[in-house]
Length: 511
Image 1 (cartoon, rainbow, N blue to C red):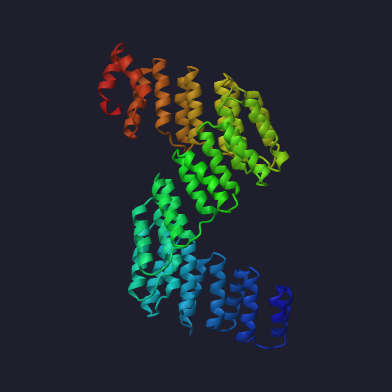
Image 2: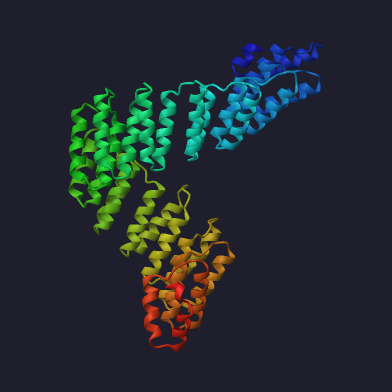
């Protein structure tokens, strides 16, 4: 049976196990543990628990090894709640929980985002006078950091130190990453300094995390100083480190410095990857340097780097912004030549560009070709087309597509409704737009500030003052403010319309 289980031939293993029982032998702990371990290794954890439960009904008593196998299996396959139940069952029998079993349950809860449950199990373990080790503390620190609960993560970290345990590099990196994720750069530096003071050498991950965070906060000078410190301390930057700094420089408009760094990376003997090129191409596009962007695109091909979806989306989007519609279409059509299939995001860029430039028929053709593939359409694709139809004066087509969305199994969102409200109001159909807003709420989609401002502006333009004032009052109750367009129109109308002036004076908070 052991051989069958090791080879994951569980049906044969069950046959042997059944034969043992059929011959009148009671399976011992070793036999059962072999079977259950094989089932867990084969991914049949829930079946293994079921087999164990049935055996317990026959009077079988598991030991710590068997419970450990099942608890480990349940934790490994994302069933921390069931693992805890089994742990309780184990403790109600003659077996006691161990550091290992508690550790497995705590780690599983943390990985599942259930850190409060993990903390509860931790407290239970301590009450049973089982001393937690660094692994247990590491699980809790990671769990709290993942949820952004950094104060609690630091408290756990400090408790660990007070118990005489030494945090390792991974724990420090986890805390630094956690603080960087929420923009608490100062706290991240404190942990970094504490780490160095305690004799733990920062690694590439530590420095890269700090450089990435500083770049995102616009502190590119400090990011470069961290890179210098990294090199001085003997930690060799990898391509991810340089990409983090490149991204920070480009995002903050330091394109010349980014270009120099890009060349330096090659001089350092590191191989640029697609992400490196994408960062620079995006930087050039944002600075309207299309020649440089396409020069890098060509270098990608020359150096054997396959352009990614991000590469194409960036360049195609920029071509549309420059009004080069035919070039954008050509690039889209040539993606297959370079072994890249357009993603849904690429279709989004194409549809948006075509619609904004009035190429609605081409956009519809592309949309229908997308429908014929196995790719799942999103509400965003419909919203782009509906907006394009309104812009092109195709109001009936826009309405028709709007009604078809639900039939496609998609849920209307506030963006789609706002496009419809805007289209109706621009076509002097504000009363219909008013009904649509009511329908919107009835269907569970909550209007936002844009919804109300769009509708109120439309109602005022059509001199539907009373309805506009009602919506203004409603907007005030929801703590929304009138935008500049509505405010300007209200003031102009108030000079001519006594009803509007009186209503406006009664709603000073709106403006």
